[in-house]
Image (cartoon, rainbow, N blue to C red; front, side):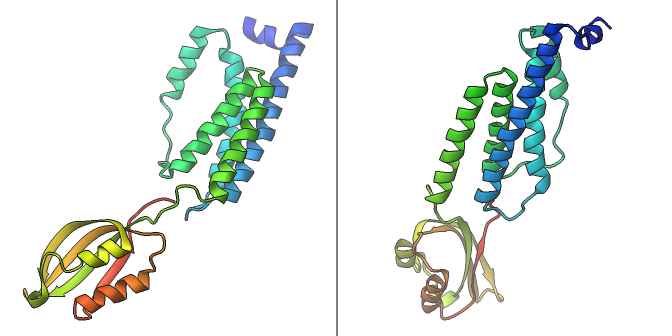
Length: 226
């Protein structure tokens, strides 16, 4: 009751605290909107979620309030962390970039909650620019790992049949599985490969078909979030 009375008292200090808290929430909300707008611009995955965008905004605002509560009070901080440790997300975040955006929003909320508004603004602008430049210039771009299945007649089967093709078209390749098929008259090879950026899938498949007597060849992408 003492805490509630102190919170809603009309003293100048209390009003100042409430106004600063409202300002912190407003700054966190505005900066998180910038973050989520950047997220929408740079999104390259397959499963876009509006709920995830809303979550970033709400987390930034809530964390700004939490930082006000725990600031200078170690007991309250440990209590809140114990409560938060019981929270579990209903769906796992599988995209590494999404995790970065979550921490981005959390850091903005934390700095706003500590009334470090200038730092929060600088963090948002600098990090947003960095994220956008990484997206714009496709820094670190490479082909995802693919599963290549090649059927080879038993009479053409030898260990180095596709080595020259792999050297020309792939960055890396690894044999994953070998099995017989069609009553033992054919061999099915399964490779995990990463193609070079300039590689065209059809050209790769055509070259392999020249080696395996034009039998079945399949190339599929592994489950990998962009």
